[in-house]
Image (cartoon, rainbow, N blue to C red; front, side, top):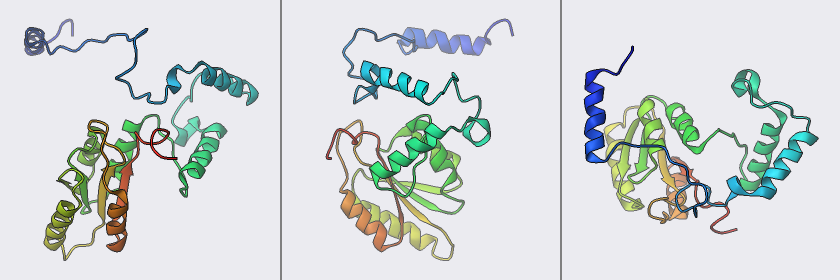
Length: 212
């Protein structure tokens, strides 16, 4: 194809006129108020130096994985990191993805099965919505941080599906990135446990910033 279809050209021209055409820019030399690098790890020179020294110490002389971890890209440093993360989070295990977005896409497109019921906070991150869109589960939003509203919505939909076998998933975040607020996680956890529901908490913004 030597040129774009006329329809796409018109779309681009319309975006230019409306000021909605996106472009890529650099942010070097600016104070960071927009990235996800809350702890400054990406620009920390000490961390960069120690990372390079670790690779030398471990005799890691490759510039990439060469493939997925399932086939040829696994490495002992990955499993060591996952072990450390599991200890830090006091969990049974950990699995590292290349980004939080990909983690949510992978988790929510595969974990909830066909017929399962997923109830997610209306302010949940787009990556979770996208993962749920790819799954075969039934998903419903509930009012932001509203446990009472969640209970009502679950009761309504459980009654509709009382003759089916399914798992109920409740999805929220530890800290919501746009508003900076949090649900009552202890109350959510208590409710989920008492009803044998699965509670999934997207923890992307609290660690290293809030609490111990």
